[in-house]
Length: 222
Length: 370
Picture (tube, rainbow over the protein chains, first blue to last red):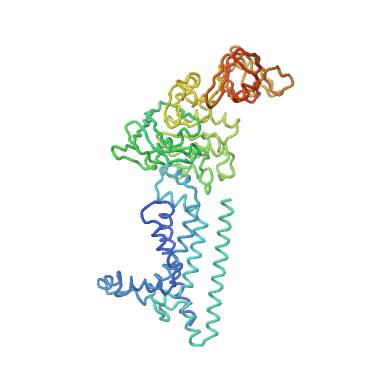
C-alpha cells in the first residue's frame, strides 16, 4: 500500500519538477529582464497559489480545466479526454503550486547576474537564447538549483489542489500525502507513521540542500 | 574588411541622475562625428556623454533619434526605423572593468567569441589571440585569478575574437597600474594596426589620448566641441567649452637627457627648462611629450630649499585668469605653465600679474609620453 503511492508520487513529482523548472525559468527570465505591460500582474497571478488555500487553487483548476471548465470543455469536445481524476491532473496541481517557488527563487537569481555580462555576450555577436543558456544560466545556477529543489519538495507535499482535481484513486492519483490522509482516516497508524517519516526526511533534505545552495551563492556574490 | 569610417549622429535625452553620477538635471546628448582610420579618441570630462555614445553605437541603448552607420551598413536610423540588435552590429566593446565571464577561464572567454569552427581551428585562434596580448600563461585561469592588466588583455583578445567591424573601448585602462598601462597602450596600438578596423577609444587621460590617437573628438556636456589631432586640440582648444573639456594640462615637447635610476629620476629637457620626472626606462635622446597638470603645481612666494619636490622653478606671473569655476595663473619660467589655484590663495599670497613666484612640481606629477 506504500509502493503504489510512492510510485505515483515519484512520477508526479518528476514530471511536475521538469515542467516547473522549464516554465519557471522562461517566466523568470521574462520577469527579470523584460519590460512589458501587465508584468507585475502576471507575477502576482502566478504567485497566488503560494498564499491561496490549496483547495481554492484546486477549485480554480476545476473551473478552468474540468470537463465543463473554460478550457476543459472544448478539450473534451475535441478529444473526448478530460484531465480530472488522471495522474496528469496531479501533475498540473503540483506544477501550479510549485511554480511560485521556482519563479521567485530563479527571478532573484537571474536579477543578481549583472547585465554587463549579457551585454558583453551580445556585443560578441551572440543572440539572446545562446546568451541566456551560456552566460546568464551558469551565473545564476545556484539560485536556479535551489528553486528546483524547493519546487520538487513543494510538489511532493501537494495535497489540497491534487485532491480537488485528481481525486484520491489508489495506484493512479493517490500520492504519498493522500495516502497518509487515508491511512489516518482508516486507523492504520503504522502506515501513516512510515509515510510521514519518508516525507519528513525528504523535506529536511530539501531545505538543507536549498540552504547550502543559497549560502554558496551568497558567498560567491560577495 | 575595409577601413570605412563610423558615422554617428545621435540625440538622446537622459533623465536626471545618470548612472555615471553626472549632473542630476536632465541631460541631452547630441553628437555628430565620423571616425577616421586608426584609433579615434572620444575625449572629455566625466559626465560629457562618452560612455552613453559608445553604448548607443554598440546597440546597448537606443537613442531617441539619429543615424549610426559603418560605411554603407546602417546600424541605426530612427527615420528609416532601422535598429539592429547589438548581436547583429558586429561592433566590439571592451568594458571599463573587462566584464569577462566569471564562470569561464581566460581561454574559454576568448573561445566563446570565436565563430563556430572545428576544435583545432578554434584552439589555434584562441592561442593566437592570447599570444597577441601576452597572456598565454593565463589561459586556464578564471577572471578573478587575473590581475587588472591581464583581465583587460583577455577582454581585448575576446573582443577581437568575434572579428568585429569596429572596436569600442570604454576607458579600458582606468583600473590598470601605470607600468602595465604603458605596455597595454603599445599592445592596443599594435592590435589596431593588425586588425585593421577603426577603434573608438574613450578616455579622459591626456597621455593615453596622445599616445594612441590619430584623431580626437572632444566632448563636453553632450556636444562635440572640437575635433582634430590630439596635440592640436590639447594645445589650441577653440572656445571656452573646449578649454574646459580639455582640462588644464601643460604639454611640451621634450627630450630625455639624463637617467638616474638610483635616484628614481629621469631628466627631460624642454625648450627653456629642465624637469625631473619619475624614473622611466627610456633611452637617452628619446623625444617625449611632457605633461604637467595645472592642479599638480604648487606655488610659493619664496624659494623653498628643504622640499621633496624635485622641481623648483623661478618665474613671474604673466597673466591671471579668473572664471567662476577656477583661478588660473600663467607663469613664465622659461616655459609657460598654467597653474590652477583657489581664489583664496590669490589673496593670501598677494599675487598680481608681474609677481615673482616659485613653482614646485613633484617628479611624479611630470608625465612622459612617448
